[in-house]
Image (cartoon, rainbow, N blue to C red; front, top):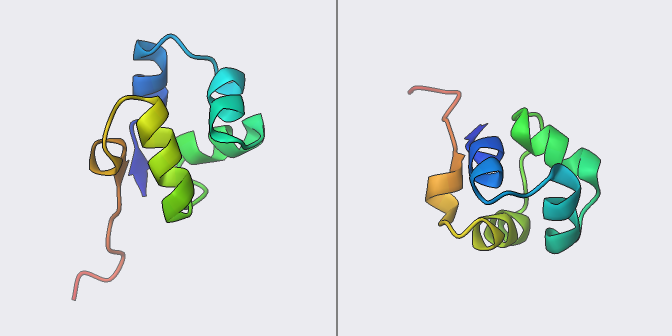
Length: 68
């Protein structure tokens, strides 16, 4: 999964800590999301997108690992 969280967060002037607090997770979760090492629940993806003023599709790109 690829994300634009870091880019959109910077554009919104938010730190990782501020974004984490607004969506109700720990800062480490935001770090993992930004690195693509954690797949968020739909609820968390929606919260992140809403806080960043974007849609889920604009923030997250889900890649199919099996190209079949």
